[in-house]
Image 1: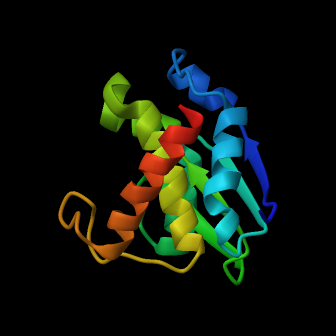
Image 2: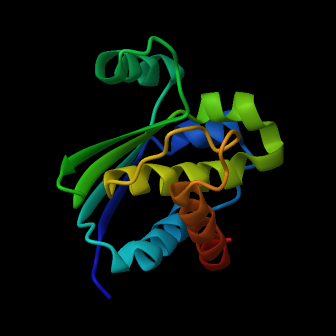
Length: 147
């Protein structure tokens, strides 16, 4: 099994938004490394950020002046990248019902973008797009390992 360097930053933002977040970041890291060991990833950073920060990134790099849930940046040919997630944005969209699952889904979603995958519509509009099908398959595997 190939080793991936995974760093998770600003974890406290998740528990500030949802104090009952029950998945340990160590379990997330272990599951991530197991699931994505078959991919060419080498180094991934997951960075939890405030809505204003992700809005600034969205405006700067996508020319969309609005916050979003996740942005990913491919730094080195699908091997290195950064995934930015706004837990506050996610919480406002999902509340307690699916917050934990959605955080995991966004980690996977961002990773698939780093690996070069893309989608043309939102998951709500087009759930059968190849990327979304793979994302949901990986989510099931991820949850079996970490949760």
